[in-house]
Length: 336
View 1 (cartoon, rainbow, N blue to C red):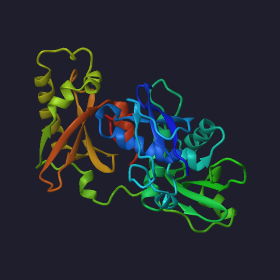
View 2 (view 1 turned 180 degrees about the vertical axis):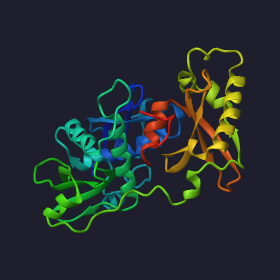
View 3 (view 1 turned 120 degrees about the vertical axis):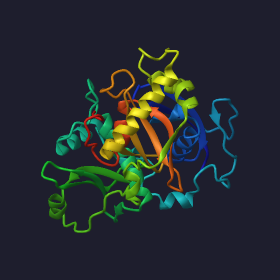
View 4 (view 1 turned 135 degrees about the horizontal axis):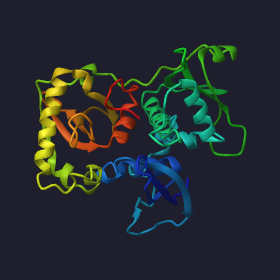
């Protein structure tokens, strides 16, 4: 397979800001995989996802400052090998399946769940789109996508208002496009039964260690203040009324101490999120009003299990997006 130069546009799920990267690779799936690995190295890309990809040309090598270079041959691990790709069921949801009017399909799914998937003032179901994309990746990692000669099934992990599991049902693509499957419908067990389908795929599993889902009040929290108070992306998330306060560090440290007392009294305040393959906890920080959270502190328990690392702070929208991958947050502070 030939190498091509692709331009991939990345979009911030919360702000809508867009950035582009150029990647020298063989397939669109490789482009997305490599670009996402690169973005994980820098916190400024924390909430960007791929929004579009285009081929620039077929040159054999590009050397530009905004290009992610790859080796001229396919013998290197900077690009996923074709053997590895054959074992991937869902390298990228949109490359994997023809959807037609994707927004309309997503709205159908939203209606089936009877859940609010929009942030305040929005109507694009951005929460659901984010959920479905990363759920598909998790299902791929766990080998929980069922494929036959005729159809493909995925468990969305969502339920109808009657608590029926909802599945993605697709049939073999007989057209000329590259996608292997053609989306047919979001289906219940009953509807799949009408098609003679009896084997159903499992949900994605985020609970290998349930202990990580509950805040351990006996553990201290080490906060990365330098990153939270000096990184430009984190600074932008801080409320304007205190952003330039001389005692900003004291405001944060005081809010963290109060938050510790609250979550010690009620462990349910801590909400689990799934990010970058790890279970983390979201803790509310009330910086301006003692009863209204402004940001969510992200903490991860260390391997020995005796303390938490407080990495960064997220806006409420960012936090809800990540938390919803596991379950609908049942809290009075983290709402869409």
